[in-house]
Image: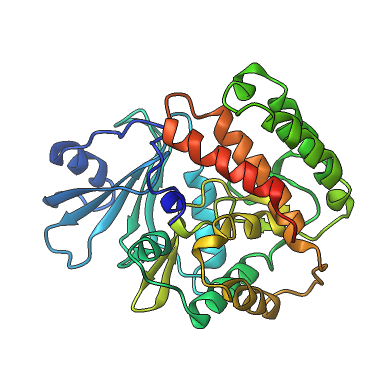
Length: 325
């Protein structure tokens, strides 16, 4: 498997340490005077810290989610949970706070969902069939049925709080400008920066249309799709959700298409089209791959002391430039 779908990437932030005594303090506002019987660190996320917490008297465990420093996206995640519960499988959010009176971080307490990420299942040799691919597409279409008038970051009420501007300008701001800096150039092999600039200039016309602006998950990858019994049990980690073009999420889910069955994309898009009310142009995949460069360059800007991530991101950038579909 190429790159093991980011499972070998180094963490962006250090793991926030939690013992039973601290976990008890964090849980007391939610379920006071209950004993924490077990704590298990949940690997997978590279930014926030998640623990599986077992509590005396409760059959089902909980998840303690501690956010990165200064991150208050738990408010947005709660709003998204209220919006999508019942139609998209999400972990239930029982409690969330940004008061930082116990620890210097925001945190949430969520329901624990059984399952294995799609990335780990593929890594083990399992291949998603037609039903899974179609279900993923259908769920993404349901998420994207929530529309916006402008692009931007979302506040706790899912309103655009900071506009991002026209999409065709994103490539200049988030790809070409960073690639012109020493910080990014020194991480690219000889010639790749120039090839990337030429590619972006060519593809900017593809992004000049005004696509439907939707609720974008912002991190819609196999590492955030939970599966149990060949059914999707959870779409995880919504901290990057924003108002953006529909093809942003498509670029992420198909980033590692070489590790997916040859017909995965067709079934994904068939399920997706069933739950949307707008037309998709034939060149949608070019748009999806081009816009994903924003993520890849962002990774390079932020991969100090993360050599495995850097190596894999460089490969992905080269793959995007060479794409002829």
